[in-house]
Length: 346
Image (cartoon, rainbow, N blue to C red; front, side):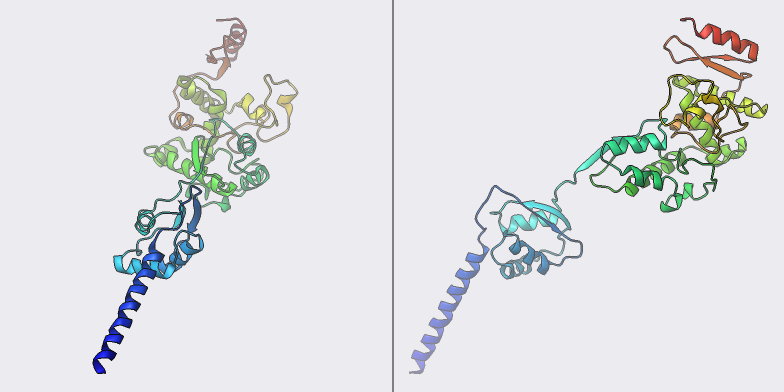
């Protein structure tokens, strides 16, 4: 009798073991395959238990409890990475584990945009708004709020009510690539970070500023004038030198670009009435530099403003031969001759 009972007990254990094994094997089989991928996101800090439950809810595994046991048996799951994944139903446990452990996430969709050299805050706002990258109204509002950004170089910006836009000249002209859907603030922060990186790359920057007796803000203002006045690279330092010469002689700069800056849309040719517009930016009416930059200067213009070419020139006029080069003069009389000469095809 005792022997029969033991036999029955062993038989029951065998049946349970076989039944349990069959259940586990059944639950470990991949779900029905599908060509339609399942996209899901694992958030940072998610444990293996939560991830297993999520995989079952997404229809990628049959049973989360069995998957958890498999992870323990394989000693896996501790290095699963957060991110957005795409998986096709029908993958095996090992394929799921490999994908999550290697961080084989969906590549983030990026957006590329270019800020041309010499663009103003308003032009940048218009361009990026038209491309659907920023909100123009928010962009222009933030352009007058330097405190909204974590960039050391703009923490000492002058508090000047005459500035049209506080961040004018500090949004570095470059081609950028950012995550699609980045906020207006994030886009501007990226441009300001690039500005700081590029300007900091100039050797002995502070020593050069001290040598010119300039603040960074004044340097950028001169550089922006050079940027808007010069097309031919080799003339940048020479035009910068003319600006310094006129400042030293207490002459008005009389730079057309400072008047163009005040216009919503630049004109092909300024009229005499345009030169009389009342503004601290108008260098035809006011001596010295304007309150701040009038555009985003390139690194080449910044370096030219740091190291201007020495000359006795006080005037320059653009040639009308399509080269965009200038004729330079030491005296007003010579300048008048150059103006007449510039109108004749060279």
